[in-house]
Image 1: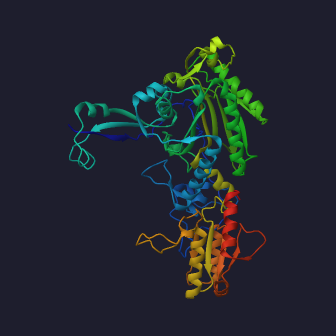
Image 2: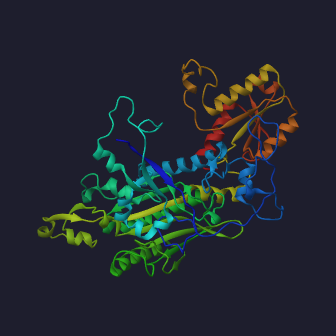
Image 3: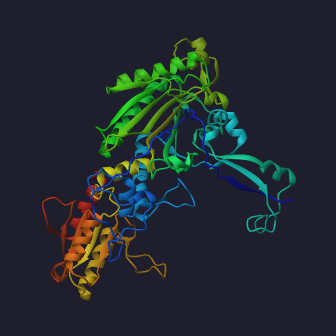
Length: 530
């Protein structure tokens, strides 16, 4: 029997007013075309300063306008777009470096804040979305995937080598309608339900960076801020009712810490979004309890906050963190949402003594009540600190232009050779290998390990420009590309075992250092988010 294979039904269509939905949904706005005066960067080893083929949104504009991440992204070669996948930006190597550093930064904080990272499927059966309520409340924002029969002789059909074809019943189970996931909460519910849970296990905190898809209207797609495919630091906390306020306060503290590191601390505000007038699930009493818990946590944060009446997700109220870009336009990024409904829909339970009191968030010392245990539904907190990684990148691109903090800079350092003498070029390559923490080209073909002190690349990125052009030209191009540190190497440095260092990440002008001193400086900047 022919095996089914997935076929994506990709339909960008005009739709009625959209329903409120969970996680940091991309708001319905489009950035105006803006610009920032800066010189177009060049690729590693290039001797040109030409901008790559511009997208329709990166046409030349007046230097008096405000920065536009689309134009800057094209100039810095961070991302591009394609007519073959509207709303799905292609991150170029330098743009991917920024995204990776943001994600790596969050992953390191997960150790501190007690999150365990998981990975969940991209597509689920329609029945899952019916169970979660997303199909009823969110269908227009989802992409459908349908399983069509495939020939066993097709390139992707049939069994793998050494495997038998699936039984008819198994094949039929694969047929039907699927949906690309627009959020991760149902998948995390499935993980929670995969084994018995006790009150002593809670809170359980999951985090997920797998890609999400939302069917944005084609006319609203904009660079990195309004997309169809994106990543976010999607997290869910399963906790006891008595733990809700503490978890929300911890999450608000998490947001405050991350935004201070990203230098966004004074440019965001908090907003509480309450129960929608329609298209919501759960009783009004449950909504009131959830909203009260969020209000108390907001009051305890000491930060100013406002109320967006009726703008909550269909399953619960939420706290939105809203950033302002350089021209004053606001963007929702982080979100914290309280959910009593989804755990009930998935039948999630944990065992606890005095279950009736436990469900109300109350405690007791009565031995008779504590002697009786029973199942209790956990409370689910949806949270995203960065929100869409792509959108946050857009805001950071417009904020920093070509002057990135060193730890985020996609072009951290470049070594410029003063001449092309063999000893100069050899010393420059040695310095580069030391700064990047590896043995260079040695052993790549044989697979042999480099010397022990150079066995582990450290994540620093150092380019080398040894072209036979003038030093002034090299320096001008390095400045235009926005390198944080510019390292100059000539015959004197090669003889002395030193380097000459300058650049936007080296205050106080040019300095002479040993490579080890420079490495320590660079590592300190990364460790302290400079």
